[in-house]
Length: 99
Image (cartoon, one colour):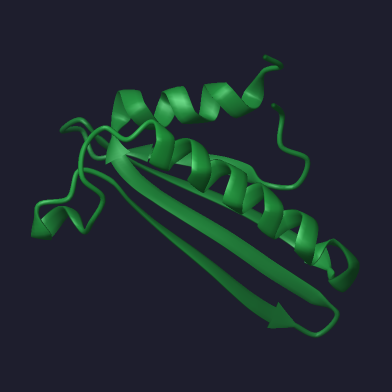
């Protein structure tokens, strides 16, 4: 399922762990739709985990941090995921193509 609002940017630490940051800046009328996309991504991540969720420093294999920040008429929604590179790339690929 392609995402309509969230755009991912990926970075690799060179040791097999990646960070994927998805963000969308929208007006108030689209905030609920963006959060629905965030939940869809989180649902996929939780259904296809590479291991336990939690901070990498605490023994977790993957983690996610959603955030929202308002700036005047615009709202920035950000979802940051960390985990094994192959897992994150599979997640992005899943949402980049039609099933």
